[in-house]
Image (cartoon, rainbow, N blue to C red; front, top):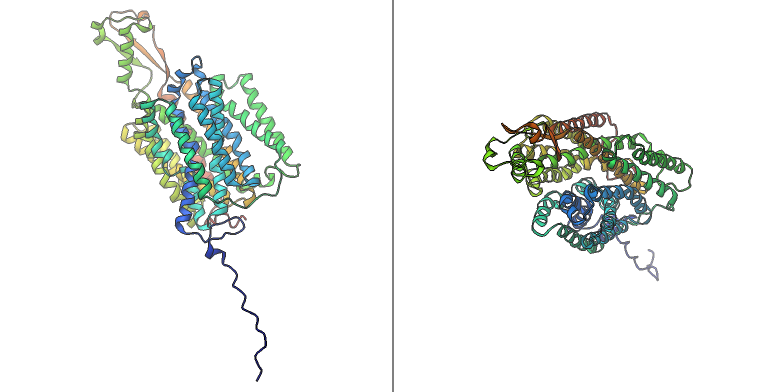
Length: 553
């Protein structure tokens, strides 16, 4: 029998279990965190990513009310919206790349600080150029959703990623449900500056919440920022967007306008050439032109054109006065003597107006009532569809939500184009569109995540953002061209008064458009949706359950 050893080594302490302690893997992934902790992270990131969409819903529709505060600006008031899209479109890929290099939460916070400074400037200034500077600083926040995709990929447990990605773009209701109603009330009750004060308070609350609740990913791309490539990409995208945003006003074929397009395309071509030879390119060109990524970007282009057309046309259609309202407005002008015709009150019953287009699509809605009749339906359904489509992506693959999105886009635009328009029908059509909206923004980022490695996630999402911005601008620009070709005109007829005294035939009504332009634009959107449906059906990528990027690395 052997004796016991004189000295017994103490049992070594067990290795700590990272999952049991909520400690994370190499990217700071919250594998062991409680469900409430994970939901809190998702909620804060999604609300933070809603900042840009929230301001767009509240501020862009208030351009007419903002214009009188800047005398002499006139039609240039549209630049308050244009510059937001231009700077945001150019900043998105750059912030995406910087998030790969320096941290995704850090870059989201940087965009939030820029937004806060810009919002404060807009709320206080009475100088037009300074107001535009503020809008440019705000626009950096457009990059937040694309950076959030990568942040979720890095820090969330894999099973939560697909559905969370779907929630990022559609939000938790602030921009979809609250903004149309709150924005309309603030505008009516306190004026347009109240919109900016509310936005400043909102971002001031979200920034510390982001710091306290959301962990930073530790994943970094071991590269240097290609400054030359960044400038070529940002300026090139910006010039193309300038042309697309202003071509309808400047004239698409004018050399002074085409110079922006040609200059932008040349810079983008040089960018592609430079990125093939530099040591640390902003994006791997082989990845950018891979079949998977090209199919995703192609589908995103078609879907974003639909979104651009619908997002511009439906608010204008619902806020167009009814025929009875327009008749009353024109009659009041005639009774007041404006327009060269002074009509005696006794002749008011004989006053007759003939329009060159049906006005059956007009509801005469205010901005607030547009939210009640349409926006809350598309936004509310889109919010549910985004989360649901993300879950579908997790179980069956992200291609199926893309098929659903394109089908809903096609159906909704066809309904708008061919069926009558009333309050309840606007709500129904908006709900169908909302299904597609949520599914589209759940499908494309999840398809992207499954196609690219984690270290290229930020810039890849940034390129998706660029495609979305350009395609939305193209859709809006083409619709604008259709609308400009179909102005709304009126002819005043009064028995016993010569035609030359009543206006000499049809006269254009400023800022209103005939049904023909809307109809052509909606048909184009339906065609884009149908072609996108074919692309989605043919797509081989995304037919297996989404892994949250596990397969792609």
